[in-house]
Length: 252
Image (cartoon, rainbow, N blue to C red; front, side, top):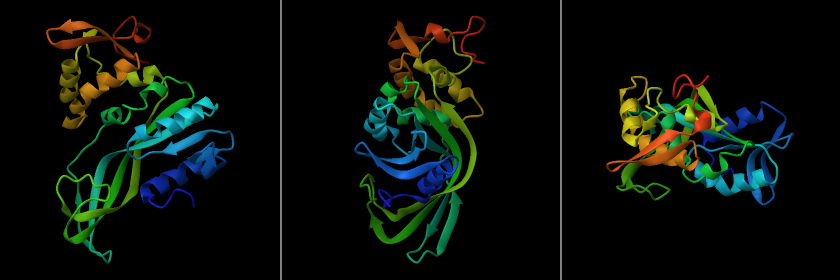
């Protein structure tokens, strides 16, 4: 197979799942790119488990050539860590304390946001439970991608899909704007968003850490507009075409 040497079980499972939903082919080489899935109708589907921005040039080219495009991105709501020895025998199993939320998606969009206004592109977020398999090493080692600040005595071996809990599709400015907190005033700052996300008991505390990058992306997509400053804080408002007359920020 083309382009599958470093493919995780998670990526392969999702690719098979979406490929089985309609007549399609996997790992299709077309116009100088290799697409995860190309349907019989010409729709491109890319499974991207991290760093959606890496797809920017590939998706831009597909859109320019008239293809409808869908990016599928899983967000890990619950991660189980399975540590094995070099023979694959289980040493330990535990749940990761890290909790993600839908707001983590904005860190994935900083490079690809110029394409998101195109009506032919959609992003489907999957909320999943995942098992991360690690292999213990005799001595601390660097990760394969060389990004570890400190060496550790294990390496990631695989990612396995355990369960898909829910999904959300982004395909319009309105769908992105729906993530703004409902109680946000007509004019707001990053701090206002941060405060409301912290107060939302249905979200992990980490969600509020994405407030600034959320504003960065939404302002560049012209979903929210800069109106001035309040002290050192920038003030924004929702674009007029997205405001409902009765209550600000509520969408049907």
